[in-house]
Length: 137
Image (cartoon, rainbow, N blue to C red; front, side, top):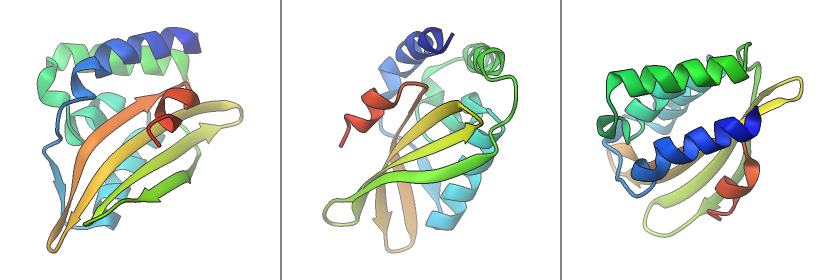
């Protein structure tokens, strides 16, 4: 089933992988609070919309993605942890965050640009397969 999700995610993220996000947040705490809530609740369609790429899909496609994720992960995630972070230059950084319960895992990747008065999520991806997102580093 998880391979099925990985295949679905490739289709949904193909366009958004190169797209820039319009996800602008007041602070990193605001950004992470919203991301963590959505991912823990398996609301990946909402996360995709909020963190970029959502405008490339119809509401029906985003709902369909949420339904597929809910079918593969029948329970909300209970835990979250930063797996990897990398500071770049001029306010840029990337992060890989893991969400899980028992032995079910999903991962989120962010490319962030911190500016004096806001933080912008420039790129957002998620996957049930660790390797592709870890490969961004």
